[in-house]
Image 1 (cartoon, helix red, strand yellow):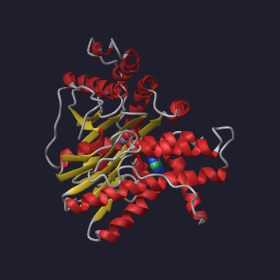
Image 2 (cartoon, protein in one colour; image 1 turned 90 degrees about the horizontal axis):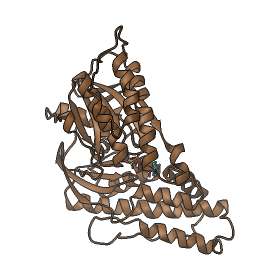
Image 3 (spheres, helix red, strand yellow; image 1 turned 90 degrees about the vertical axis):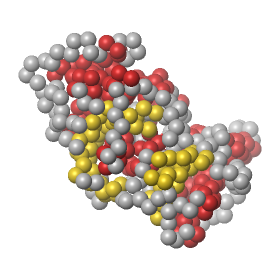
Length: 392
Ligand code: KG4
Ligand code: ZN
C-alpha cells in the first residue's frame, strides 16, 4: 500500500511517499520546502505569500518525491486532461499552470491513496494542498484521505526508526495524553483509542510557539524563534549563573488545563523596555542569554505542570508530545525527567526532532494509521474543503 501525502497548512510545503509492510512504514521519497526566509522579515507567517510559495513549490516537490521513490515515469504521448482542472480557474491559476504540464507528461504513479492536510492552519495555504490533492485524485482516479494536521503531530511520535527511513509503529497503551505545542496550538488531548480524541485544554491567547517567535523578535533573533531562543537559553544554563530575571507563569494554578502565554510575552516586553531605558540602548549579549532562559523556563514549566496534573487526573498511560515546540530540547529533557519522577510507569513519546516541525511524513503516517486500523476514511475529491479552524 502506497500513500502520497501533502502538507501545506502553514509555511512548509511537504510531499512524501510512504509504503507499508504490515505495521512498518518506509519513507520512499520525501521533499520539503521551507518558506522561513520569505516570512522572516515579518516575524511570522504572511498568508498571501505562503499561498504563492506553496503554489510555486508543490509541483516540483511532487515530482521530486515520486522520482526519489522510482515512481516518476514520463509518457510518450501527452495525456488528455480536457476540462478536468477547470475548478482551479478562479483562485488557483498559478497552481493550474504548474499542475497541467505535470499531469499531461507523467504517467499515473503506482499510488493507492493521496493524503492531504485539510486543517487546521492558514486557509489560503491549506487550499493549495487541498486543490492539488483534488487535481491529482481527479486525473489519476486515486482516492483522497483528508487529514487533520494536529492528528499528524500526534501520530508522528508513535513511530520509531533507526535510520529515518524505516519506521515501526510503537504500540500504544491507552488512555494517552497528547501535549500539542506548535506555532498555532497549545493543547492537551486525551485519547482512549486510535482516532478518538477529546481536547481538554487549549490556549486562551497566544500559542506557545507563537510566544517563542514573538519573544525572539523582541530579542532581535531570527524567525522561527523557538530554536534561536532555545540555543541562547541553553548557553545561559550551561554558564551556571543565577538568573536576575524571572518571568510569570500565567494560569499555572488556574485549576483547569488551559494555557495563556501573552502574559509572559508582555512581561518580557516591559522588562526589555526598562532595561534599555525605553529602548534607547541595545540589549547586551549577556542580557539576551538571561532573558531567553527566563522566558523558556517559564513557558516550559507551565507546560510541564499542566501535563503532570492531567496525567494524574485521567489515569493516563502514555504521554505523546507533538508539534514544532516538541523539538525543544529543554522541554524534552525536563518533561521526561518530571514524568519519570512522579509517574515512573508512564512512557513519554516524542517525535524524532526532524519530524517535529511541519512535514508531509506526519500526514502520511496519520493516513497509515487508518490503514492499520482498517478504518480508511476517503472523501469525494469534488467536495474536499480546507478548514482553517478544524479541531481534533
Ligand atoms: O508545528 P509547526 O512546525 O507549525 C505549526 O503547525 O505551527 O511549529 C512551528 C513552531 C514555531 O512557532 C517555532 O518557533 C516552534 O514551533 N519551534 C520551537 C522549536 N522548534 C520549532 N519552539 C521551541 N523550541 C524549538 N526547538
Ligand atoms: Zn504543525
